[in-house]
Image (cartoon, rainbow over all chains, first blue to last red):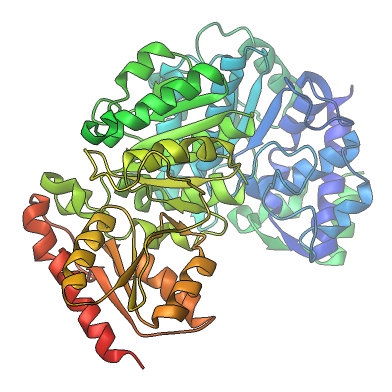
Length: 268
Length: 314
């Protein structure tokens, strides 16, 4: 698998999905494309023909507004037809802005109210330990989301419960709706915080580099008694220069058809 | 039956213990109140499935939702205010919106928190969560009803809030009582007024009924043990006969039983109503023998409300 080419294709698909509506959560979708690609095309034990397969690995995107990136991956994996992507947020769609396990095949938890999905992932990891099915539970939180108290409630419990079947990622893209995270309410130092909460921590300098992500996941799987937090230092809007340049304004931004064409050209 | 001397928390713990022994999917999550709620023995007996997240109620609710998504049947338990108003968003999104099967146990409802006072007295718990779509709200009256309800609590797939008195409840129901989660119970029949009561107020309503009989007023006493969905059929049939209603609840009269009954009747066939309950005030410290008169929730207060509503009868 050429992760980089696949990531480009998923980014194109994400742009087309949001572009079909003209507005959406572009920044935080594009920043997690690389981790999604490494998970779905290498690590996760899943079966797109059987989305509810017992004992499968799971991914809970706690920063639920990144749904469009996940939908691009799920469509490419064959969970549903690619034509669904153009129904994003249209009336009675199966692909809403925020992830919904009851609407979209392949989505493992309904998320969107920040902080909650992370606790849900901890509950899922706990349940997997109880039934001893050896599944690996992956979850992605945001750096802005890490301002939620519930993230730290869940983190403290997961560390104490020694949930080594839980592999979490922080999409540390340094921006949130109202500005840069450092200016609003700085969450640093994330590595030290997660270590103090009893987690195995791996920090990746380029969180958009699939090879670094792959290496980190391989290492995380060997953790014997701790959950792992992989801190991905990412770029919000990664892959399209005018979206990256928009900075925190790309959290939920409009996309004209000209901009869609420009973005797709850059991603060729 | 020994239920008459048992605290409801112990009856609940016993029923849960039996269920957990039979069904390995049933889990229990506490937030530092497992000892207060009589469940410490379950943590020891089922160390994997019964666990404590510490003082972190929001985390507890969402962890439960995650476990439910894995096919488990999680019970979560804490005091009523921390099981509802503190975690309203987690109940709404992680549980109901995500269509999970979580059983939320709140103990010490309303004034029954006694010496824990206003911070721990949920005058608003039903009101806060009743507007969350699809939630079921059940308030057991006595131990017999709780035991009979337990299999139906387990069988129901969806998120349910069980508003549970913690101490020894006044027995109301007999062993031969037939319970249905979604049907209100007519405890006494009468023709002059319908008194609809929940929780600890059922025994107060029965006391009021005795006083009323001396004045030749025959009240029909209904236990609305399930406040959502409210059993409009049973209530409507009674009220169309008596043409007057008094509701009795250990909760703010805004958002709870009075509101639920008024909403249902006004959409069908409205009649004069009076409300016994906490009249938009916060709680305060005290034993029930001080608090119930203070909040005008005694059998004598119910009698006064009946006389008032009979005056308003058309």
